[in-house]
Image 1 (cartoon, rainbow, N blue to C red):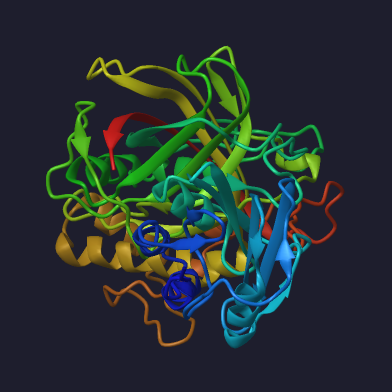
Image 2 (cartoon, one colour):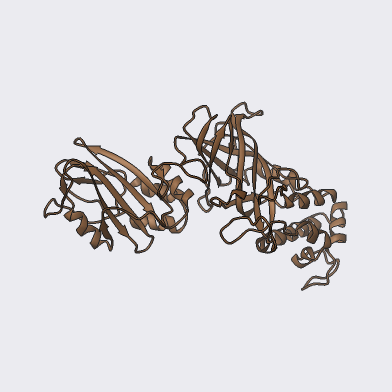
Amino acid sequence: MRVPSSPSASLSSSLAGNLSSSLAGSLAGNLAGNCFGGLAAICFPVLLLAGACTATGGNYKGNGALSTFSCDVTAGIHSCNDYTWSGVYSTAAWEQSCTAAGGSAGTGCSQSDAVGGCKISASSGGATVTTTTWYYTGSESTVMTACDSASGTFVAPGMGGGGNPDGGGQPMGSFYRYVVNRFALPMNNREYAIDLNGDTKIDNQFGNLFGTLATQNIDFQLAEDSAVSSGSLVELVKLQTTDSGLKDDGSAGVTLQQGAQSSSPDFSGNGNFSVDASGTASLFKGALAAGKFTSPSPASGGTSVSMQLPIVLSFLTEQPLPLVLPLQGAHVSFSTGTDPESGAPGLLTGQIHGCVLKSDLDSQVVPALAAQFTRQVQSDPSSSSSKQLLSIFDTGGCGIARAMDGVIETCEVLGNSIIQAVLAPDVQIDENGHYVKNASQRNALSLGVGFTAVKANF
């Protein structure tokens, strides 16, 4: 009998880079040929141990009842394998191989600090070995996506597939895939707004920004539509549920992740897309009720979810490039149904909520605004919108900025009284991603956008 060569190096590299597609490939690539034999040959998936194994020595485990063995490897990317089987055979060689790999042999992995686990079972000769590989580095959504690709079952730490107070339960069942075919930007602080922090007031400060700029003939929605239709902005949605009717499931899950840019996106319901390996997948646990999915309220103080939200901060429709906003304390909701344009299955009345830290705003959003303003005035300096931008923002008086030089600097945008008013922080979020109800030190701006999505393949 033998223990297969170790996939741990490739798994560790994938987790370190947070590349779920590579991790999935590593898991899937190790499903074949991984065998261990006792009294009967047993093949099983993902195994961290390396070297050859022979059925010699003592330490026979099992007497026909359920038995366990584990190997905890902390070197590099921390991971631990739990093995459960019924049968009688020696684990001496397992223990030797575990030690040789720098691990610690035992009878069970600790789940207290685990991000998540991937469980796969295999049977041979009337015996079954269940392998659960626990990961302590990376994100839950990365492990879940990779586990799904490897035909495994994601297991939350301490849950074993049971209930979860942050989302009603561990998501199970089949996956249904969609691509966003429209993002809708708010035009005031009431559109696409929810109460993020539990103070009974709805929050969407970014709506004030988009609405105020729209009154100055600076309309970001046109560029947002152009980015989606041209394929420069691709956002993928994956719904996991046990209800094939997509109506009722108290333990559903939704993963949002960026897709790779597409030169000719197909929103017919049969389009093929691919995941952007440089992006990060974000998992939202929640409930489907009467065809509507809602993740837990951020004000509830449960597990905080962050995500990367692509938004086009431009009013130029030619080659619009999205800015990826780091959204904290995020929330998502939508209804399942039929996409009205294609007639294919889709997600309707979707909304994404959260907040952007003021520090991220100043370092990422405002410079992007300044660059877009400059691009506009230099591409069409005689237009009324360009002249209006120059009169509002090209005022000089800060840093290297000079008044009416045709270049709008970041400091000129930051110093503008209109921008200061509409980009004033309205919520407070702590270092753990939880909103502070009675905020005394507001440090973030609330954001809510609408979306619809249509069935897709990826």
